[in-house]
Length: 175
Image 1 (cartoon, rainbow, N blue to C red):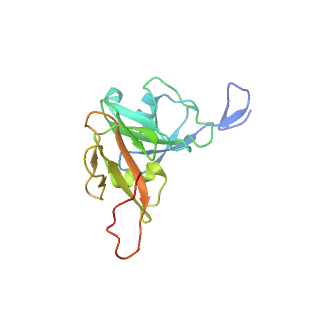
Image 2: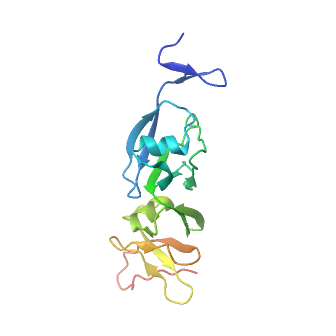
Image 3: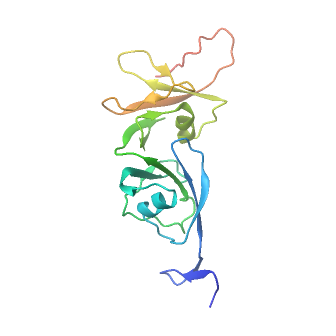
């Protein structure tokens, strides 16, 4: 009998602890250990210290970059590589938006430049992020000035590589 290991449903041994990374909406991740290889959203919220669990949302952030809401009683399989990052936040609803054409959900009405760039997989030193508007000029999302996701409809954002050319007004050329 192997010590510190359990046998999975497939008969293969797996470690007794599964390391996950959990962050709030600031994306400051911290490591946590779980013993269940297929935890529920409720177990992840509980491990992160969120109580009562039904007042929290948990988003899984897999390697493909698209956030996926994990329901309280929904499970995820931690034995699959690239599924160990989670965002846990007090929330009673999701806010939908797009960044560089990729649909996302967020648990708060405000979202920062840093989070938008992280979700887009872009370097904050080299890229800026802009909010698209239909009837007014697009607006750059700046540090310290989060974008509002609470407006009706799906908010749209896009990233632009910063230019260092003198004489440019800094506006993106977005089509």
